[in-house]
Image (cartoon, rainbow, N blue to C red; front, side, top):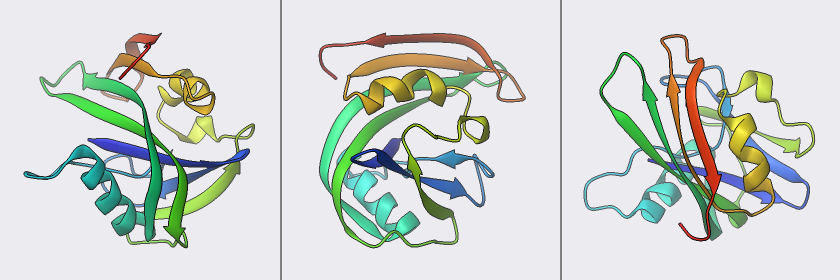
Length: 150
């Protein structure tokens, strides 16, 4: 899976998920990689679908694995910072984009893991990690480390 967050100076662009998995939470933009698609290609497609923008300056900063204690699946998410884009962020059926000051990120309305890796992301530091959640999406276990390369 992919996750892209636009950062321009001291602002970041997040989207309020309006339906499906993660509904009611602020998050970056992205989703599943289709067969025959590159990870970066999936990111570009998803961002165009979700908020009508095309990322132009993409930097991969992280890889996180997510799982839930009652499921066997592991979700690997590649996290990208987008420093430049074309288009105007526009609401879609799935996401409502909004700019936030990087010092006022709405962590209480986001996935619980975001507060741990977002500081690394904002400082352009590369990271890897894994988070295990319970049935209510509370973190049961976490591992997060800064790495030299992704």
